[in-house]
Structures are given as structure tokens and as C-alpha cells.
Amino acid sequence: MLTMHVGIDDTDSPRKGCTTYVASLLVEKLSQLGVSFIDYPNLVRLNPNVPWKTRGNGALCLRFRCDEKLASEIMELTIDTVEKNSDMDCAGTDPGVVFFEGSQVPEELTFFARQAIQGLVKLKEALKLIRAVKAEALGFNSGRGIIGALAAVGETLTGDHTYELIAYRIPENCGTSRRVDVSSIELMAKKTVPLTFNNFDADKRRVLITPHGPDPILYGIRGENPSIVKHAHRMVHALEPIERWTIFRTNHGTDAHLRRVDSIGAAFPYQPVIVSGTVTQKPQVIPRRHVVFSIGDKTGKIDCAAYEPTQDLRKAAQLLIVGDMVEAFGGVRSKSGKRAVTINLEKLNVVKLAPKVVFHNPLCPRCGKRMESMGAGQGFRCKLCKFRSSALEKMPVEEKRLLKMELYVTSPRSQRHLTKPLSRYGLEKSGKPKRMMRNWFGVNG
Ligand SMILES: [Zn+2]
Image (cartoon, rainbow, N blue to C red):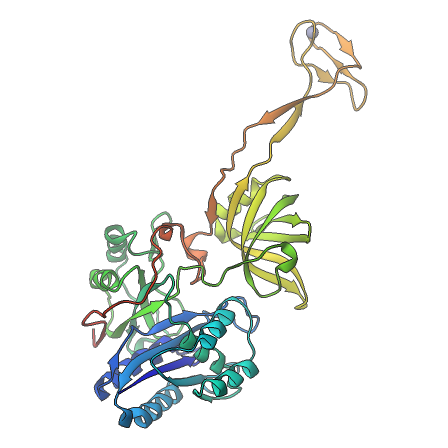
């Protein structure tokens, strides 16, 4: 028996397909061949800030034990399935497949995966590593998908992780609007939260489990363990046929992409970071778009932007004043790929509030009424008793701050796959599942 890890990435295009679907097809085919899975299919989201990726940027890895005699058949089957289900003709779709044999995933691969999740890696580095660890790889078109495929093999999800059950549509329905009973989703969320998350936005009464594109996903239900997502799936009434469903283990909702950097000077373009700083410039509100403020430390300054759909986060950002200490969480954008200029906020932690001082006109020393100004540098006069003085000055008064010292997170509908929602704080876990549940995928409903 040997242990095999099969990584796949970038089979989809904006007009069709989904790499999780290819993995789901392979799960069925490989089971029929008699392999025994040692983990749920791993769905690994990579750095969402890489410039050439506009979609989810998720790569897949299947891990199983099988008879050595089956190895070449498995490889052929995989390649064939990827070829038939990739949108190969679409520019920018560059599928990659990586095969690695071994009961232990080498540390170099885990390190490479971390780089692909938190930063940028090059195809050249991936190919070099593939040779070093004696893996095998196949790339279509530019072969860029090999990067994600290798990273998926390397990320064994031994740290914090979550689960997603994805149900797929029959091919003839792809491209039409999705039919699911909204009230069943609302009820499911009500009964399973906080063990499920980001499936239904109770405030806006908005369904979050259904995507909107032409891909084959009917819905994806997120949760903390395999049984809860399966239970939730049974509670959802689909109003159209489900071709198949599969439970994935994933880094969704774990903040795996964010890396804490020591200083603002160490925040580089395209990296998702957590960085501390002091507010140096009052928030600017750009109506209907975003709020921008600047933070600084001794190494430099950077803008932070909170966009309209981020709601609470945007409202919090608006209340910041110069001198507040914050931690900014988000992807670093740049100008022409060189200088880090803006952090697109996913979260904002308000660490320390500066006193907000406002200046009021002085009280009249004779009658106690609030005086009025006679113009800049002209002193004050009392309307009531007519007392005038040029010696009096405005009085500093500390105003109550409306902002709280807490963590503000983007609203669920604008959260990235990787963003850890507030509801998951305290539910973090580590380690691999000791054993798998019996029926973790299904074909035909
Ligand atoms: Zn007076």
C-alpha cells in the first residue's frame, strides 16, 4: 500500500467549472477503484490578494492509501478528469495537477504552502521543489495551476480548520438561477449557529450559501465539523436536483492568509497583513464608497480603506480620531506593484482610544452663562450681562468616544473565504480528524 496526495488547481474560468467539482468527481471515481481516503478532500484557499486572481483562488488535495498497482491508473484517471472538466480554452485557465507519494508530507512543502497562502510564489520555485521532493506534476496552458496544486499538497490543515459541504447542480441547470427554499436555510442557520457560520445573514435576511455565477455549485454550507454540515445539509430544501455533494476540510474562516508584520515598513504589496499603528489622519468619507484613514509608526505610513459593504467596520473606521491605536487586518494594495499604499480592511482592532478634546467658549465669570466669540482673537462677550473680555480662552472639554475598544469585522456577505468571522473566535481547533465519518459524500442527492 502507498499513500498518495493529489493536488489540483485552476481548472475553472469565470464562465464555467469549479475545481471543487473536479475533486468531487474524482472522489467518486477513486472510491470505485477501491482507494481508502485518509482525510476529507482538503480545500485550501490561497492568498486572495495575488494580482492575477480575481476569483476564490482555492486549490484541492485528495489524500488516500491505495495498492501500488493502482498508481498509474489513478494518475491517468485524474489527468483525464481534469482535462475533461476544465475550461481549457479560456485565457487565464491554467490547470495544474501534482502527485506526491509518501506517508509524510515534507516540511518544505508545508513551508511552500504557507508562502502561497500568505504571499507570492513563482512557478519556477514550485517546479524546483517538485524535483527536490520527487513529486510529479502536469500543467496545462501556462501551467500556473501547478503552484496551487503543490500548495494544496503541502497544506495539511493541522492548524485551525473548518468544513464545507458543497452540493452540486446537474449540468443542464448550470447558468440558471439557483432554486433553494430560503426559509429552510434561515431555520437551518437558527438551529445550528455557532457550529455553522456565514450561511445566512440574519440581519439582512440574506442567503449566503448560494453563489451567483455559472459554476456547478448549488450551495456550500460552512461549519465546525463534518456532522454539523451534513445535518445542516439535510435541513436545507433544494428546489432543484442535486447531482452530488461532498464534505471538504478547509482553511475557510481561519485567517490563515493574514501574517502579523512588525512594522508598517514591512507591509509589502499583495500580502495580507496584520499591522499596528497610530491614526495619523482623520478619516475621510467618500460617499457611497469608502472611508479612508492613515496609520503610521516610526517606519512609515499607510492608508487603510473600509468599503461600503463592510458596514460595521466602515462605521467604526469613521469614528477614529488622530492618536487612536489600531491593528489593521487586510490585503496590501500597491501603486504599480512597487510601493505599499493601502490596506483594504477586513478587520480593525481598536487597541487604544485617544482622548477626544473639543473646545467650548468660556463661561461668563460674572453670571455663568456661556459666552460668545467676537471673532478670531477678539475675545468673548456675554449676551446676558454684556461682560466682555479678551483675556479669556476657550475651554478644553473631553468628549465621550462612541467607538469601543474592540474588534470590528467586515459584514458576512463581504467577508473573504479566509476571513475568520467574529462567531468563530473561541472555536479554533487543531490536528487532523482521527477518523472520518462514514458517508461524507453522496451521488444523486
Ligand atoms: Zn454674563
